[in-house]
Length: 421
Image (cartoon, rainbow, N blue to C red):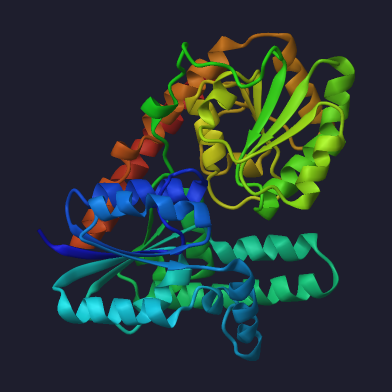
C-alpha cells in the first residue's frame, strides 16, 4: 500500500464542526487506500483525548498543541513581510522538521494538504504529488470581514484578503490539483486565478446521512418546550456569532411576540462573551458544548442559519436537512447546496422575511419540506458519492474528466429540479 502525508490545520477528530467533519471523512476514506501519516494542530485541549483514535487509523500521527493567544502574537510577524498573517499563525518549526524527516525516511507517494495554511510545509517538496483542499476561498472571507468592520480592523482584514489571495494563487500554481467545497467556490477561485483553471476542481461538502437519520427513541433535550428554534455551530467563529446575535436581537423578538412560548437555542462550543450575553434575552438559551447535536436538531421545530457573512458550504445546513428539521436560511448560508427555496428550505435575507418564515413553520407543519431536503442531501451530499475524485487526483488520474462527468450529472439534477418547479 502506498504512503500518503495528510496535513490538517486542526485535528480531524472528533468530527464536531464543519472543517473537522470534512477532514475526518477525507482522512478515513484515504486510509482505505494509503498508509496515512497525519500531521495536525490541536487548538482545543479537550481534543487530546481522541489522539488514540487517530493513531489506530494512521501509520504515524504527529500532533502539536496550538495556543491561540501565542499563535495570534506570532501571526503579527506577518505584518513585517508581504505574507498573510495566516501563515505565521500556523507555522511551527517542529511540524516542519517532522514533515521533512518523514519525507526523507519514508517512501511517501503524495501529500494531501487540508487548508491553505498547511501548504507552507510542502512548498519545497516538489518530488511528491501535492493535492490541496482549500475548502473555501478564505481570502474572500477576509474581504467580507473588512467590509463589515471599521478602523484598524478593516485595514488589517483588507490586507489579509490581498496577501492571502496572493498566497492562494501561489499554492495553487505548485499544486497538482486544488479542490474547493463546491462548484461555486471553485468557479470563484478560477475567476481570481485564471492561470490555474485546468488544475482546479471541487467535491461537495457532505454529511453522514445515516448518522443524522431521525431516531424516534431519542430523548428531547428541551424538556416540555415544543416551539424550539435551534442554531448549531462553533460559537467562537465570528460569522456564527454575528448570525445568532442578529437573529436573537433583530428577528426573534417578532417571533416571540407571535409565539410567547418560543425558545431560541444556540448550541455550540466556546460561545464568546457577546454570545453568552444573549442568554439574558427572553427565550434565548446558550448551551455551550454538547456531546451530541443530533437530539437538538431532531426535537427542534425549526433550524435556522441566519448567516450574513458566509463562505463556502455550511455543514450546519446540511446536517439540519439530513436530520429532517425544517430549515430557514439566508442566501449566503445556502451557497453551494443547490436547494430550492420553498421545496427544500425556506429562504430569508431580511429580519422581516426571517421572522415570517420562522412564524410560518411554527404555525403549520410542512412535512414535504423535510422529506425533500433529506432526499437532496442523500443524492448530492453523501460522502461515498463525492470522494473518489480525490483519490483520482492523488493517483494522477485526469481529474478534468471527473469535472466534466460531474457537471453533466449536476445538469441532469438541475433539469429535474426545474421540472419540479
